[in-house]
Length: 438
Ligand SMILES: Nc1ncnc2c1ncn2[C@@H]1O[C@H](COP(=O)(O)OP(=O)(O)OP(=O)(O)O)[C@@H](O)[C@H]1O
Ligand SMILES: [Mg+2]
Image (tube, rainbow, N blue to C red):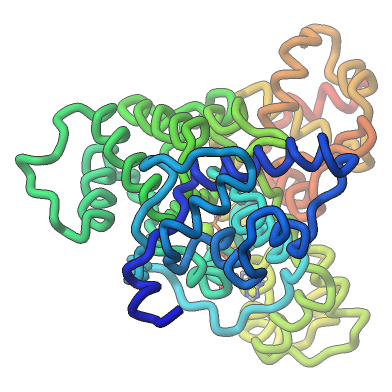
């Protein structure tokens, strides 16, 4: 087929593709013992050649409408106007103020998983969740660099300054409409603007990346609730997660929004990716590029103490250079990993916790080792109800502050050090006294 004809052709919409996939699955169960059909078999059924079949399923290059009709008839379906659309040949990107990630290390398995969710599983809403500085923004940009061309358009925006939803959606609609929408044509109410947005996300495949979502969430309340005046963002996330469209909204956040938590699931198109620290090898590379030259053992010790947090590693490396003339051993001997900007980074997150969550975190720090729910409750005194403690632990987990493994809870080592350091600094003796008498 010539390029010109492909341009004139049509592709399946997400609805059309889904219809075809469902019918194929049904037929596989009925006639093929549930085994997937090979391309050869589909070719037999549809009388189309294998390359055409691949092109149809990829939904990027246009094909003849008759080809799609034949494909559908093969699976006893009728092609309707809702099943087809024109291919969007003009891929566009607007990366706003996104940072450049030239010295990016590791994250191979993380990128593979995210790619699988966005491209193969066609997830509609994915959140990259992790504590401050772990590398969420960098990873989101790396992902755009790797798979951005698989989308008709890509838009990246930071929510750090907490834009009101009206301003934010108008900006998005302007981009998606290629600045064709005039003010008068914009729907008045937010819900209608969201409906219009979904229309665009249906008709073309877009990747919308929103960074620093935690800026829209409340502090000193259970994790994930939108701040006053920002509640409509919850509606936006809920509708983008629930409604059928062919695009993906990728969020990065220090805290999981509750509207997302309610929608996600292993077999659902809404997922959360918990981003942990960098592995030793990768963390070492950050230290080395900052000019540190030391034994493998010492560098690994630094990476572990920083829990692989990319920002913490950069800050520590700078201090070791500036204050300890690059001597890693000398720095390690001071047994002080949380200071200056690292303290500030963790402080921002600690200050957002509710009183109960702060108390839980203190207890986990004092205990140092992983602890079970009942042990923790016993230590905290029975004044804390089971229900409150469960809610507190869930909230801390949504903020990436605690980790749980086989029903045991613990803090990352960098957070533990921060809490103990905060103890000393703020002389918050109340909890300490309780701990000593237990
Ligand atoms: N894999 C990596 N390789 C090299 N540098 C990295 C990597 N990941 C992150 N960084 C660097 O570490 C710093 C912190 O990363 P980033 O800003 O992505 O963290 P974040 O999780 O988005 O933090 P915040 O919650 O504060 O937004 C940045 O300077 C970033 O370039
Ligand atoms: Mg970030």
